[in-house]
Structure formats: structure tokens, C-alpha cells
Image (cartoon, rainbow, N blue to C red; front, top):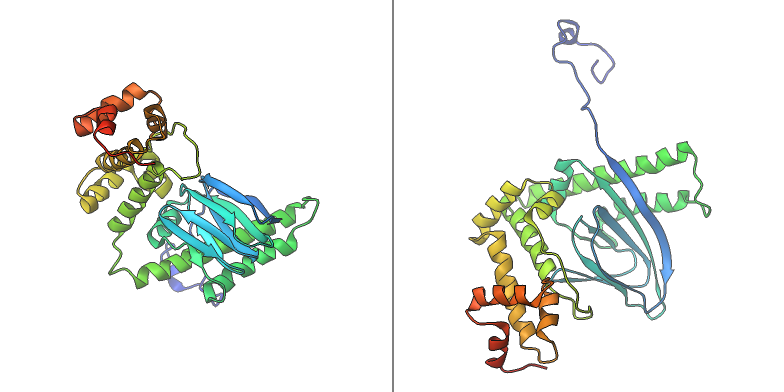
Length: 305
């Protein structure tokens, strides 16, 4: 049947040229949805999520640090954080802050690819895309109840809002990617996303204490981006001229040199901050990198306090 409600001749004969809707078999989740008012000293330490997070500032101001980027979110601003991206949040308002947040996920690889290519994080208040996104989030807030008890019909309405949100984000990403197709090749975007994930695994926030950290794996990064590990390795080598492992080693070496030069840190603490459970393992690796042990390097490097 065509849009006017009339069967075409082609559709009557042998089933040719039949208009069909696409089959949909997605695992879609909406979870962790809430809003709250926080005190001026509120702080959320570095974390990452397996799904997407969308955040709306209702009152006040928030600072978000993600990788090497720092964002200041004011009233009405919306932020989208993709899976696997480490970030920390803190309130900047002396009177406190009110925010709304929702965590969601979908296992459709094309959607995740669109989000990765687009890499758009901030939707400032007053922009058309912000207004469209905010209408969906505000509808969720209006429909919420204090007791959290919802009928099946109400749950479907929340899920319908999620599909509307996914459709809108996909359309925004598609428009943005089409506009910048000449400057942002797919391979470059994937390579940058992999490099950023590796940087985040190496960088130690100044406020965090020492503690062992697991090495990031290219397989995990690729899975978070919705691509194969083989393709991730290929595009990374093409853009950066080295493997992700080599890139991570160079970052670790630079970080190790900075930490070793800090006289107030023991070599054991340095090893732990770089993810080594034993100082001997770190010492052997550092000697492979530089030809000197961490102690020898420290003795020949002017101390920093």
C-alpha cells in the first residue's frame, strides 16, 4: 500500500516493489533517571559509564572535566557523555545547583558510530537542538511521580520518549557529520577517540590518591565505540603512525618521568599510580624504555616538589 492507501499494480503482482518497514531488534535501556539539588561543595569524582548520559542544568552552574577538556555548564545547558568517557563534575554555584540526568543505552552499532563520529558534547541553552532535547527531558520530569510507581502504559510512554530522544540525537549527528564530512574522515574520528581513551587511562587527576589501575585494552575501547578491534588498530596506525600499545607506552613513559621527579612520591607510589602492582615490574619496564632504573633516573634528575 502506498501512502495514499492504494495498492500499486506492482505490489499486486509477485509482491514486487512492496514498501516495508525495517525490522527492529534492539536492546534499549533507560535507567538512572533523576534530578536533585546539591550543595555548593558537591563533587562527583572521575567515573565512566557503560551507556550514554544526558545532563540538563536546571539551576546554577557546573564544571565538567572530560579528558583534556573542561566545560562550564550554565542554567539550561545540556551535555551528552558517550559510553566509556571518564569525567568528573563539581558544583560552581555558591547557592548550590539543581540538575537532571538520564542514563540510557542502545546496542545498535550504527547509532553508536554516529555518536562517535559526531563527538558533540555540549548543547548550549537557547540553541534549536537544545530546545528539542529539553522538551523530551522536561516531559520525563512532568510525568514522574514522587513514589516511583508507574503503570505499564506510563512505562511505555517513558520508553517512547527515549526512542524520540535517540531519533533526535541520530538526526543531529547525521546533520553535523554531513556538514563536516570533508574535514572529519571516519578514520580520524575513530583514531582520536581511541587516543583520548588511552590518555584518560594514563592521566592521574591531581586530587586522587595512589592506587593501581588496569591498563586500557584496545578491545574494550573498540567495543565501546561499536567497531572491531582490528579496524581500530588499522585506523589508529594510519593516523598516528604507531600502534595503540606504542602510543600508550610513550604516554606512560612521559608520566613516569614526571612522577619520578616528584621527591615526595616513593617509587612504589609511582608504580601504583601507573598501574603496576609490583615495583619490580615497573622497574623492569622503565629500564626497557630508558636503559636506566627508576632510582638511577631519579638520582640524575633534579627533584621537583
